[in-house]
Image (tube, rainbow, N blue to C red; front, side, top):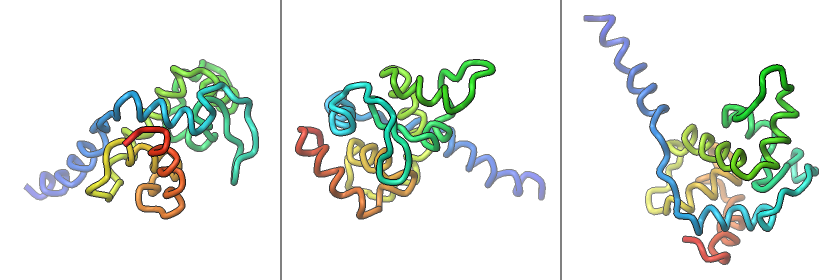
Length: 146
């Protein structure tokens, strides 16, 4: 009985972490892409605090957190990151994986799915409540998403 009680919190943690994040509408995803790069495969460049690449301006740590999608066997993570960020389909897969991992951390009850995705994408796992993501969210709204 004790072992079962000890296992319940772990099982709840696994269940919560394995949930898929709700997906925002296409307009929201298009606006994130537009705000990041005018939806173009921009070359890697220094951005605020790290190098960002591609359609969604993905940083190396973000790519690692999203599970290194489409990383080829024997390929260096840095090479897989750049290749993925410059491939629209892979970049979106990375962002979706990232949201599946961190969406549940968003403690902004009245925010839309689009706002949560935007703030987490821009500000990281705790970006939902970070004031530094306010300007980014304003840009997404001005693009026409909500």
